[in-house]
Length: 369
Image 1 (tube, helix red, strand yellow):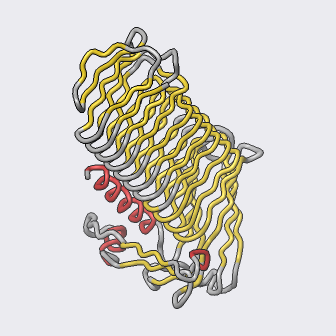
Image 2: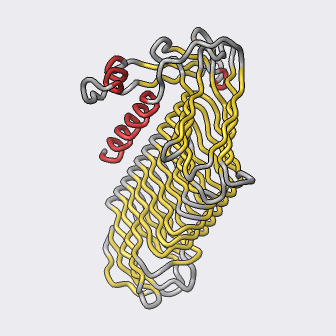
Image 3: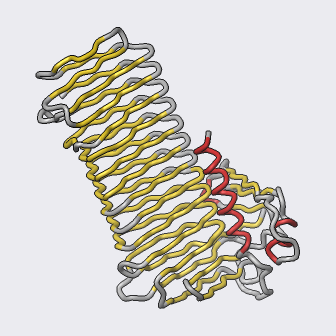
């Protein structure tokens, strides 16, 4: 419950940040249009409401962004792109949210529909931020795949220089990254994040939508309110996954510490090399296949679901297994039993230096090579 509350608060803050930067647009005529911006900065922040963001490696040391404003109602009279540079560079795609609450985004499909509740937080009286947010308190933004509403969105291609930091804040759409070596913070309220061939610190945060990370090197943090997580060929000091509801599938993971926390959903991790870790799901089966087991502590805990633990033959560990309802089975070449009951088992293999605790409220436990 605490995790869900934190995610709710964080997304209220994210939406507030979006709205705080969206000021009344100047009246300029036109149709669909593109804009290009370039910045010499260490950090670049891009804020958008509806659209897709594609992130690539820059050839030089500057950030580059090309924005294409599209749709039947697209024009500079409706959408304005604002750029600023202080401590970091920023580009904001300003939608007319005060005048229009209903939008059409055909990529959602004819039956697609997303509703966002604009936060009602109160700010210091008298400030422009207070006037803006308090006037919009608890109002809803509706986006449909078809039907009535303002049909407009903004797609962006961002080129990020080597080793710098990029932040993308998007309400509805999707974010894609390909072959980028930089620190990335990717936030989306409703939609997916997919990264390929990345290095650096990667933080992917979705309110509703899946995250796919392939071939990443560096610290990786994934947080979804609701959505599946898939990871392959990831190496880093820490790999952390937190999802309120959704499956987690990982393969070929090498790290010092791994943490997987799901409110509801199965967890499957294949070919894992880690020094310590924790796997916690409120409801769902857990399968973990170790390629290498470090000498730290490992905990596997599920409220409801089976646990299947596969260990290398050279593992040295003391394993405690408990289930409230279910059986415990071991298929190991050689081991020593220290305690054994109907739903409780303590055993050791090798010199027992690694500590492992397996616990399920309802489900069976299998331990094997």
